[in-house]
Amino acid sequence: MLRATKTIPSGRTRMTQIAVTSFTHSTIRLEHGGQALVIDPGAFAPANAFSGVTAFLVTHDHQDHVDVERLAAALTSNPESHAWTSADVADQLTAAGAPTARITAVTGDETFTAAGLPVQAFVGEHAEIYRTLPTSPNIAYLIDTRLLHPGDAFPTLPGDPTVDVLFLPVSGPWMRFADAVDYVDTVRPRVIVPIHDGDLIDAGRALTDQMSALFPGNPEYHRLPTGERTLL
Image 1: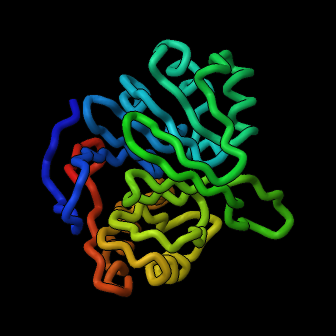
Image 2 (image 1 turned 60 degrees about the vertical axis):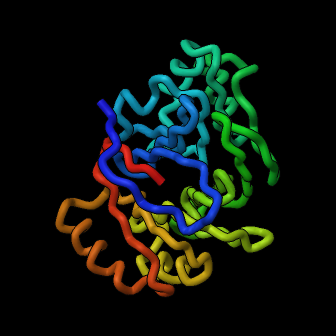
């Protein structure tokens, strides 16, 4: 059962109270006003990442970010649910039996409301893994104008928005830790929550936590306990 364990105060005078749960790797669950929004419900995500969810945001088509079969089942079983994703993932979900009316293909930058929260979607490309491998679309999501999940890339966002909380990738075959440090220097978030580290053992995560001292701008660094709710 999910429960609130701590509160991270917002740096803003006006704040929407949001409960965030970090699951394995890049799966993030946000709860507000009795609704739940899940970002990147991938193959490593537990079953409760898919249950009782109003909105799903998928950044790209890799299995660690979207479990097509389980997401299609969740969309089919819950008439109140909806998913926003790239066109290729939308096609995969439809082929897996998900109702077309509950899926929106995001093909360009746009703004919409998901689970009662304003969302800005920024379409770009997945960071290069290797020059001979094909690239795929990657969608970064800015939620409630302050929480940024960039997917598998370090995108420059138009308008240079103020980011309060950055869900920051810290490991993976497409990045170096130095890239994460540089991105923090660009975005200048107040709070960093590390994600995309499902490939690391505990010692690797501990080393990452130590290396967080390199992040410029003196941001707060919070590794959230897996499966426990934290209020933002």
